[in-house]
Amino acid sequence: MTLSFLPFPLAQLVRFGVLQARACAFAVCMFTGFALSAVVPLPIPRYDALLVYAVALTALFWALRLESGREIAAIAGFHVVGLAFELFKVQMGSWSYPEQAWTVVWGVPLYSGFMYAAVGSYIVRAWRLLDLELENYRSWAVTAVAVAIYANFLTHHWLPDLRVALAVLLIAVTWRTRVYFTVGAQRLRMPLALSFLLIGVFLWVAENIATLFDAWRYPHQAQVWALVHPAKLGAWALLVTVSFVLVALWKGSDVRDRGGAPQVSR
Image 1 (cartoon, one colour):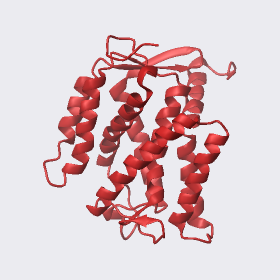
Image 2 (cartoon, rainbow, N blue to C red):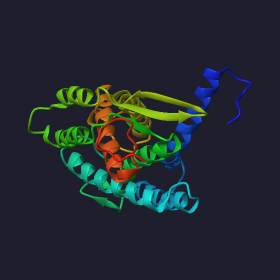
Image 3 (tube, helix red, strand yellow):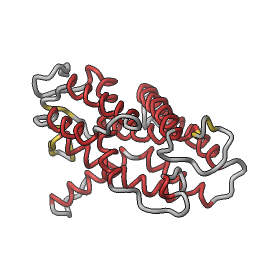
C-alpha cells in the first residue's frame, strides 16, 4: 500500500489498521448481520436467519478464496467447541438468548457457534496476513495453561475461580515470548501476552455492540441494555489464549519459532 504522502508512523498505523480489518472480515460481516437483522423484517425468526446468514457467509468466504478449505475446517472446529461452551454456560445462567427460534438446543441458538468461529477466523487470517512468527514459544507450557483456563471457565461455578492466578501463570510462561509480525516492509514484534490483552479489549468492545443488538444478554441486561462489566475484558483475554493455542496446534509444523522451543522451524 503506497502511503508516501503520510508520515511514516502514521502510514504504518494505517497499514496495520487495514490488515486488521482484513483479518476481521468474517467478524465484521457477522456484526453487520446482527445490526441488519435487528431492523429488517425477516420471514423466519431472527436467530434462524442469522444461522442461514452465517452458513452462507462461510460458503462465500470459501468461494472467494478468502479462506481455504483447510482454514474453513479449522474454523468449523471453533464452532463446535464454542457451541459446547455455550450449552454449558447458558444452562448455568451466565447469559441467555432472549428471542425465540427453531434452531435452538437447550436454550442456545445454533448460530452462536459462529461467534466463536469469527474469533477463530480472525486469528487464522491474522496469522497469514501479518506473517506471524513466534520467539521463545513454550508450546507445551502455554497449551497446559490454556487447558487450565478453559477448564476454569467451566468449574468456577462450583470450585474457586482461579482466573487471576491463571493470568499470572500465563504471563510467567510467556514472559520471554515475542510475536513477530509484518506491516508494510517493516518487521515488528510485541510480547505475546500483550497481544492477548489487546485482542481481549477488541472483543470486549465487540461484545458490547453484540449485546446492544440482542445477540445475547447477560443477567444485568435482562430489562434494559447496560455496559458489559469491564471484568469481562480479562475473561476475553484469557479465552483468546485458548483460541490462539488451538490455532497454533492446528498449524503444527507451519508455526515458526525463532527460539529453541519445541516447534518445527520452516
